[in-house]
Amino acid sequence: MRLKNKVAIVTGGARDIGRAVSIKLACEGASVVVNYFQKEEDAQETIAQITANGGKAVAVYGDMTKPADVDNLIVKSREAFGEEIHMLINVAGGLVARKPTVEIEPEFWDKIFELNVKSVFMASKAALPFMKEGASIINFSSLAGRDGGGPGASAYAAAKGALMTYTRALAKEQGPRGIRVNAVAPGMIATTFHDTFSKPEVRANVANSTPLRREGQAKEVADLVAYLVSDEASFITGTNVDINGGLAFS
Image (tube, rainbow, N blue to C red; front, side, top):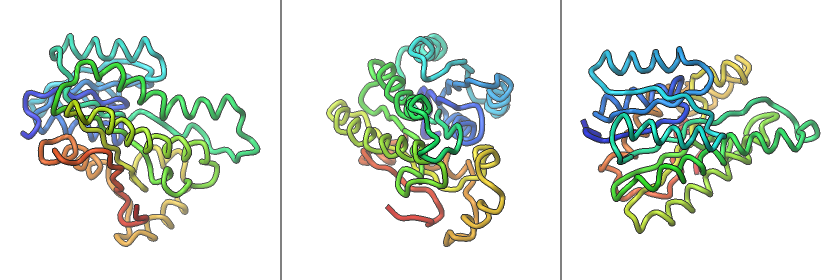
């Protein structure tokens, strides 16, 4: 129970990696605010799994690219679990579609950066006034931010690379307040993201290219997040931690 009596907000916390993170933090004792955007049933299933194990959680709808929704998320967190926010986990983001550069419209480029970078900025700005010494922010980058991503993922890769840099900048800014900021950069993790955007043969080839010869699991990413927000990681900030089975090294 490393996180007992602490409050965590998980954007995009209703499914896949976000769900695994929400459940893990709750198992460690945190009260969890599960943000969702598309499917309320996913959020309710996540809440059900948490409460079945004796944890505390609430689901809050919100588009993290909309300032009003971001502000409402903070309001709902404080209404449910008190004034202070101890952890902000920015999982929300996405690829949307694969497009080569010659087919990318400026509006699509802006949408990808809004979804993956601006959303993190807005959530962090909204949460920081309620975070004190010992609090932690975790951003979700990607292996794509290091290696440029797969075919048609240039906008996504660029956004995730920008998020890595923003993580370092925010860590420097908030360090004097005792607030740590880190990012995780998953590689091939078995989620609906890859069910949607990656062909089975590509997934198999990537998995077989890792030293561990497999895809990662959402729970393994959640375990890393739980460590990074805990006091055991109290001297770790400004890092982008790779979790990709050894596929690429930073």
